[in-house]
Image (cartoon, rainbow, N blue to C red; front, side, top):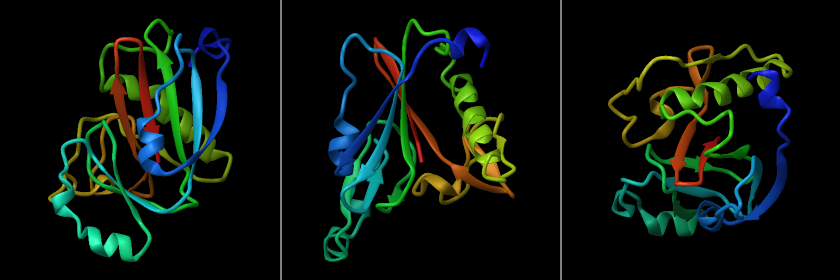
Length: 174
């Protein structure tokens, strides 16, 4: 991130609630740089946009008090506990961080996660290649690794997804 990029302020918001409501949330217009720190009301299994709830035993989720939610971005399912670190980053289309290349656009965010993890003593790297799939990655997010995601010790430690509109990009990181 260049110094011109860091000079633009970020609005940081703490957002509590159920995963389904947090995924439906839209930024206020006009869209500005925002960081949303999500705090879950209950654990949730979040499906990617192409996944059907039919792949899940919903009665078992209900029995265990786990919400079933879906996000508007792709990828596999993610199980979120109440103490999961879930951060959304909103970047308006006219922002210097905007990149028309969807894969390349994750790079700065992955690098930011790596810098944050390094302050905790975690040596992490940004995955700079394409989508590395495994037999389970279509089903489970953390079974594969995509552009900009963060890896430490050979394991994915931060999963990223992205949803774009005419006015902004919403990056979701867990």
